[in-house]
Image (tube, rainbow, N blue to C red):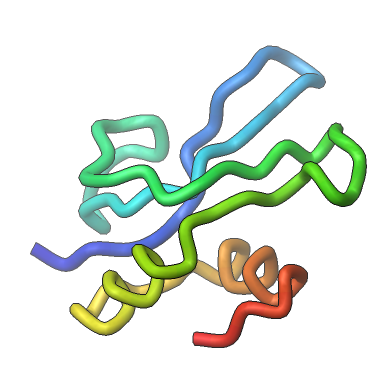
Length: 82
């Protein structure tokens, strides 16, 4: 199984929020996640938009999980380097 760290969409129309999750690459966007690592609320204030567990992200990347481009840019906003 090849895993990827990507976003899982929640919320309603025009009020989205996302969870940063580890999923099988072949799973649907809103399918079952292996593990939840954090969240992204684009409507919140800047300091509350992104939250994640850095240790878990590093552990999954070390184990070979691919990071999506969107999640990589969100992590870079928090000055987190892979």
